[in-house]
Image (cartoon, rainbow, N blue to C red; front, side, top):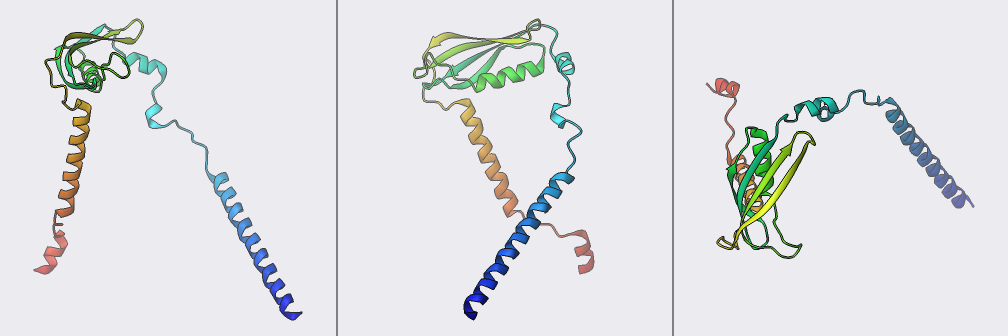
Length: 182
């Protein structure tokens, strides 16, 4: 009988100890949550009001046009500016959009060739209209990699080279260490 009693007492003590530990952890979590003040300022990225954002939009109509070549998958492989607007930001944004574009006749077919892509900004509606027109089919490298894929591969190569350079760079001695060595 004594062996059973000790076993029961030990198990009871463990259960009580676990309950106390669980209660302490739960109460500590509640205290931490209660101690956290609510956010009072909006995040830095959302600090502009709608009126401020609208004031930043261009007040005049903008137009850009690019001549692009596509591969057999419909990916744009390169783009050349045909017409640029006076707004440099609009030019950069539309050029980036043109480089990332797919031009397909249906979800499964594409015609490799030269295309004209136009972007027109209307300040009244605050919308951009994009147009795509085929100049001629063929006459381009149908097996070329897409421009976006090439840019991603270049970024990976540059990151790997920078990491290798940082790994193999020998640390320069600290100024105080050279002074003590003399």
